[in-house]
Amino acid sequence: MSDISVLFRPFELGQLALANRIVMAPMTRNLSPGNIPNEKSVEYYRRRAAGGVGLIITEGTCVDHIAASGYPDVPYFHGRERLEGWRRVVEAVHGEGGRIAPQLWHCGGMRRAGTPPEGDVDGYTPSGMNVPGRVTRHVMTKQDIRDVVDAFARGAANALALGFDAVEIHGAHGYLIDQFFWEGTNRRDDEYGGSMERRGRFAIEIIEAVRDAVGPDFPVILRWSQWKQQDFTARLAETPEALEAFLTPLSEAGVDIFHCSTRRFWEPEFDGSSLNLAGWTRKITGKPTITVGSVGLNHDFIPTSDADDAVFSEAEPASIDELLRRLAADEFDLVAVGRALIANPEWPKMVRNNRSGELRGFEKEMLASLV
Image 1 (spheres, rainbow, N blue to C red):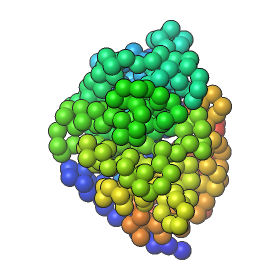
Image 2: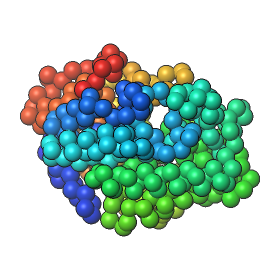
Image 3: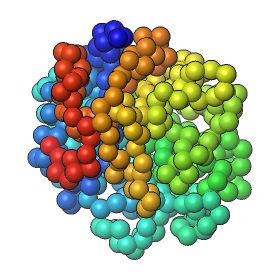
Image 4: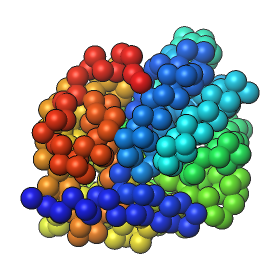
């Protein structure tokens, strides 16, 4: 058995000091009526902090843009009552000794006209596509792009003002930022489309605006992925060289930590090396990385056919020996745990205290009424 202590080493990056290497992965729950984090939200996050999570990354919370939301009852990150709800979440997590970052989210083409509360507002996309080749959404103008960049900056400023410890930008899974990254959905012929460098410009402008809003010392995390909800096999970079060309401008723009989303953390990213995506990202950028993907479970998650990644497949507990081996080898710095923390709010304490035999598997019903 691998040494469990590597999971409980402290982590420090500037002003961010974590008690251990365990991160709570962001998981959409659709449990915020009125798009307001409520007392159940407060208790949900408080319990995971009390259970020993070092850093909590919240469920996706929508920035202040008319088309940011794609699903009902997800929390927003603007408006007095909503921000007050998040303030209570921060205070509860800090009261348990935890640290927390909001995940700022724009759903892009995942939004369908008719989704409440914005109603008939269409999904915003770089080229009108939510899937390659089908123009069914709004094509963003340059003014639209500026508006969204500004919305992310306001969200980051709010995170700092509310006492959060970092901020994460959601650039993964086929949502708006990722739709700019992905050549399949970005067919623009202006400075935001074409080459990989130009397809990354939108994200770079967001990162730079966020950095300006929070200053040099507030940690900025970027979550990104090769795979898309629209296509599990999609890849932004087929080689380490292409990955370096993709990541380097993002790193230079101001990302402090890369959250590298994979469905199975143990899978190598490229032939000829056992490194996973977080491992390659760390090697290329020199920045800390978060690995994620079926940690502690025997089955990866499968988004539903309507591209709603809030629903995950059921799974039973599994060994984390391979995870510990890779962490001990400094392949990555932090480990995001998702469904296992839904099923077991005290997962960190249970693992540390040799109580893994008591861990529960994840069942879909657990998402229905969470605290």
